[in-house]
Length: 252
Ligand code: BV8
Ligand code: ZN
Figure (cartoon, rainbow, N blue to C red):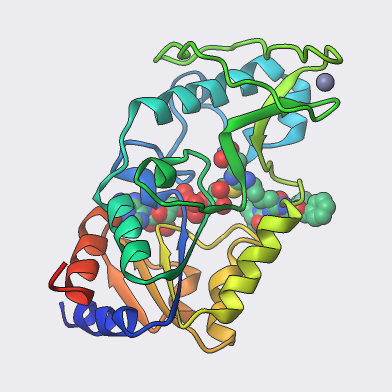
């Protein structure tokens, strides 16, 4: 694949690299993407309808049960060679910033030091009323998925909610500012496994391109980000990323 070699040259020559990831990054670890239809108890719902404050208010047990099922799944799966390739990029290119829309913490499991979480994490629950952080529960949720009543806050008795950003909620200010800052400064931005449909996250590769970065996209499908990508590597994270890294740093 000529493109991989040319993209690898740009990556190896970059002073500052941003790696921007979406749900496709974790697909080969066995974590369903947002595009994938929901299954089991939640199959009649659309993720965008369930990932909202309204849904949690209307039916906390259904929503909390969904997040606990996703958290248990994230604990059962392993990072894939794509996550490992991202950690390898951080090792080869010292000024690499990983920005993720994912909440499964698989980048951390693969050795990425401090990914920026634009949409929070499944592992930082907090009280929906007083926002005090709560401990993620130790027992795993049943594999088939079940409605689960959210635990109550020890301090105020409010319901515990997942530490993710729901649709209609503002993104956390510091991570968003840090992500935009990194996008304006980088020479190369890799966008991996995102449909580029959800804002403001989807603006990050656009900002990078506007500030002169070379955008490399890895996705089996076309996305709106094709328009800003200098290289569109058609394929999956777990196959393309390791090839990109070994072409960029052959002796590694
Ligand atoms: C905001 C965490 C404003 C939760 C997520 C009405 C009211 C308010 C806001 C809006 C509104 N209408 C529109 C908006 C804006 C809205 C938005 O953008 N909507 C879209 C649908 C148009 N945005 C928001 O609501 C944001 N907040 O705007 O607030 C505001 C401001 C101030 C004060 C108050 C309010 C919040 C958005 C964050 C929502 N939370 N996640 C959870 O995880 O449950 S979003 C979630 O979906 C993901 O995090 C991700 O960001 C997004 C899209 O998912 P992707 O990661 O891209 O994955 P997806 O499944 O879509 O695609 C997978 C891709 O991978 C595909 O391209 C596929 O081809 C590819 N792929 C598949 N397999 C592989 C692969 N690639 C590589 N390898 C493979 N193997
Ligand atoms: Zn509380």
